[in-house]
Length: 168
Image (cartoon, rainbow, N blue to C red):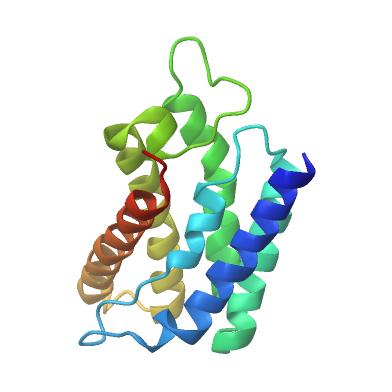
């Protein structure tokens, strides 16, 4: 329990620092913005209570908002992603449900399951974030293009992180 909490706090801090110091400075043509910090919510254990999930997502997004000066957009998008996560897990659950002590990652559920699960959450987050940022429908297709490209780039980073951190 304590070990899991320590690991999650370390992951929280590491992903925020990586996002703020490195990834926020990456932008290709104004269309690709990687947001790897969402990996924290994606990788939280299945047993995480909804209220902990939502509060963690709020503080994660709020800290990113403070560093980026985006006035709550990341907090809103991250809370939205955390809100839909339990429903997505219910839809993608195996017949017998999830085993206690397992986490949503490549090692426990395989590459295909993880890609589907993470992609839905990343696209939902990016969709909400970029449409809040644009706040105009006359830029619908360019914003949608930005959502898709940024989601693909973020998913590449998530896959790389899974490949690098998973034990053989």
